[in-house]
Image (cartoon, rainbow, N blue to C red; front, side, top):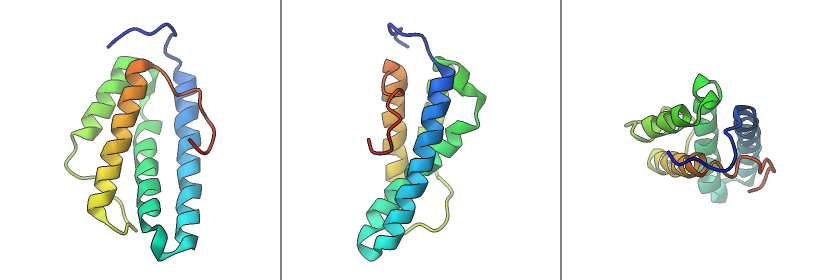
Amino acid sequence: MTTSARAWDADLVRQWLERRYAASRLDQAVADRRGYDARDDFDKAAAEEWACRALMGADCTNDQAAFAARIKQLIGQEEYPATGLHDDVRFERNVRAYLRKLAKMTKANEGFENTLRHQ
């Protein structure tokens, strides 16, 4: 784990996860209203929701190394149980992609200050 110029801010990470979780729920609702053509968007938002929910309640957010280890553990999972999806394979691919994004953010300790809905 590389050390960054800033210290790990667990509260900021938790706030970022909560806001991304809420934004992904809104994105799913929008995609659902758009119908058949927005299936990909729905599955992508569902993947983001799954990843954020899996990390939000964990105590590992207090420590950068523990958070990175938890993300790595989630990436290595075989399955990501969820219901109401359009394509399970696409959903699992999106979960892994989102977790890899979070792993990069965690390693660099950057990006958690961006709490806007659209990123």
